Length: 485
Image 1 (cartoon, one colour):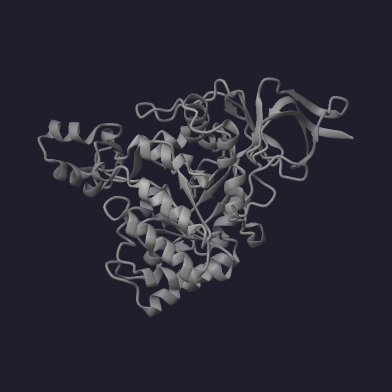
Image 2: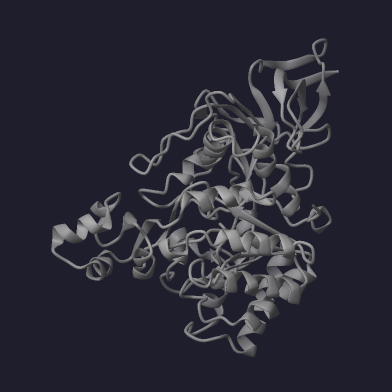
């Protein structure tokens, strides 16, 4: 048999967590069709991968790529890291099903202005992707905050029965259109006044369709434990899987709280379906708010509409230059985004090492001076945490990026290297792979990622995009969701 491509002589890490083995991988069309000794086989292209790792392409479990997939279809910030599929629509923020009649309030403005919110149905967003594919695959959640903005005249109160019904109706249509489930961002103003009951009533629609519930908790500091319990309660009440977004203990007084939350999650997993995602940094990034500044050791400005030249500058330095207090400087910069140094390294390592922890970048592609996690998350886990710190073996790092999220999000035939699976593949040098993006230079390309294939087509090679855009808009496959240990 003649194959399209053979990746020859590589060290195969198949995504399941087992140790590497030497094997060739054959691709025909969009699938892996053979694995083993293929020295005698013929192929249109035979690529020597000797001394390199061949693994499944990485699944970014937590992104805000809803608009980036359409605006930057080469997606170099992802393919350069070995990412082949992304989960969009997190933290209660999604482009669909929303048709805004005015400027989007924070944090919806993280995806763009009013013109970005033009998809009345979730199917419209998926169709836009299909009409102009990106280099990576994508599946989307529906944002609860987006639904609130779409259906409620006033956001500073819990939704009433009619508004809950309206949001549930929009979600029902989105689930029919292939949405993965509902996400919430209960820490943000558009959803802060939402009651637990409101979330339960809406998310039951996702449960009925076999979907999931992903949540940016109501609080990640003083009330972290209570917020975890709320998420678990919602999952039990609606009977669906819960994914805790970017799990952390944020704020200097609250460092170490993951010593309490992770054992509680271990206990909860015996009763309900549960997972979490995490990014490998001690700094977070979102809209600029005074409350977050107060809990942070340092705050950098990612973008500011009022003072564009503030990007990349420390908030304290800006305030000192202008002779203003921190609160006044925050007000002067608005609307703005910021990077907050609010976490502790021990907490980050503890969460990364939790067996059910998936890796998610949580990057903001439209920030002019983004958090370096947008370009560096996956190589950082492979290089810094797995190779250098030996927090876990390389094959475990790959599992957290591949088969684990593929199972939790129902990405059928993805996240593993086996005959019959889609040919989403990363080829990288285990000795040199490492993030190069920094807080000073956040858009630097990582080292060590040599080739990336999406659906059998090479999208990253020799340090640059190939221009190919074979990505697909993926839809919920309830039969493929797997939350077994």
